[in-house]
Image 1 (cartoon, rainbow, N blue to C red):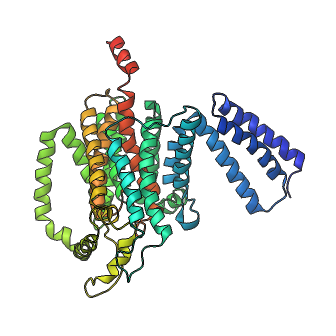
Image 2: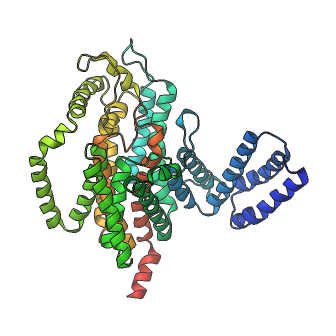
Image 3: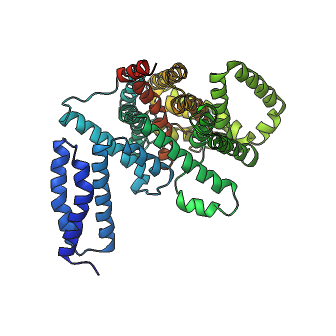
Length: 480
């Protein structure tokens, strides 16, 4: 039985008084203000309507979305916190596997655009050389989407339009997440909040993996697809770098973070050795951090690693021999398909259907590359791959330069962690479509965790912006 109309109206007014007014206190966006006024009347009528339980759930979701918009209007960085929680814990998935993370990023980009148009009267993107190849990548992706409407093999259909749009959306949302993080993180405290929340969620997840009896409990809490290349690169990278370089933390916390890192690598190397995507990105990330800090030690560990691989090569191959051999054969076939338009690619998802024209071990079947770089060349061509590589090369250089230019403690540890996470993510791209999920493999359902890597990489540019400001340098001079 539903409450009376007067009671609902009173309850609604109380909610608005407690939540909306403080959030609007500093708002000057006329579009948001107008939308809020309209929303007051709409929600008041809806709350008074005696509908079904499903309709009431939709109303509550609408209210949550409205409150979230108010929060974003005042604290734009909170959107990144929402994105982290949605990517690691919230299970929502709508039609065509559209998930909450996609909705959050899309809405943040829309608010960012509207804010630039209505309040600032000009929409600008953070000025950086790193952003240029990313924007060029977006332009090429849109062109390749158009090219993908052509029929490259007249007797084979292209990917459905919704799949092609999903492929384009994956790149737009990934780039958008990077730009949102770089633009909206104005204070190091927000980056700390995001980082430590990631560590907390990652610790809970690994506890469910390693401690008997906790698995079902953790799975009920964390319903997203966390495991795989991105998580196994960034969680060891962040815990290791904070344990080693963040001298602001007490010794017991640094030791605990080190244990988290070792436990994650142990789980991959010992318990899931056959799944290379789980442990190899983490090893690459930690190695990159050591190499960036002490190149002599890193060089020695690299030699040791090569010797280990030499002696264990049979073990490495035997645990994944069929997968490795079929992938190599598949790549050769896909490169034959790419010859149709190597410069701009064949559009999103199309090559997946074209593979059925070429036999692989005697079978005419569709398949994907299980490799991000082959996917990129096949879909957006060598030109798109050029801008993709240029973007990540610029990020790597930025991390390398910033590691000695930011203050000791959390900022420097974050730089090392992000540099390691970048290397680990690139390594993961060789083992699967972890960086930019392919619509017919990992797809939209793993995009939430992939977006987190783009968010943490955006933190690199945010740190540069924070510690390159005149106010920061003035504060350093005063303290000196």
